[in-house]
Image (cartoon, rainbow, N blue to C red):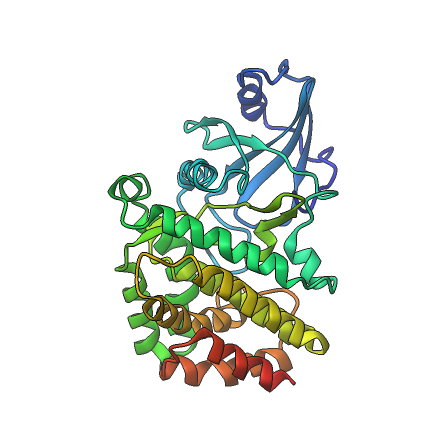
Length: 342
């Protein structure tokens, strides 16, 4: 898990201590665990908890996210994150943490813990120059298999009826907020947000970012499914691909390597699409790409590594005309984006 630090300044909350004590087989007496808060996220408190018989991870959602703009979200999203892990592991075993216990009353759940020694964070790998298309293709295949395995399922739809959560966590802060920052794009951005909200086809992760993906010896492990939603599967590949675009901008000398990852991810994903015409989902993903990229500069959750002047201007110059006039092919967008960086 990313961002580990000492928990000495943050005592383990007694309600979480009692929760861990109630987990069967945890080997824990209240007050006897070693707990360290993990940092790096903005939406939850996350603890690495070491008991007499092993290590686990405890997560509890925050009602207000730790960002500059006011961003509030219902804490019951923890429930759906745990459900997403269970569904994902049933379809692709090992692709997500195992859920060990849940407690809706305190809004927390416990899951298996992964050490970064053998499960490095994909974002750290990408930003350290270890830009491997094989890993990108594997992530694309996994999320494509999860979409295929949940598409057109009324049971999954009933378990993830989270339109309001997805609106609060994704559509509002990423797309609708941008209509205030760029009034000239209000009409296409509103249309894009409304169309995404109205599309219900498969189980969406909603935060498929490299910071939420571990590259393990047996394949990628996907974390942080707080935004889980039965909705438009195009959102997941678009969200992930925007990060590969932005990192190529940040490290221009390796832009071609990031482009190779972009193409590998998209190819791995598209090979799994059997629930709709490939051109249809490609068109929706391509429409989302420039909007989400722009939101990572001017939205409520800007990326931390770009130059706020030169890089941000490249993003605005590239994305704004492509939001106004939609491109229908993610690979065409990639060619233009990385070509411009070269």
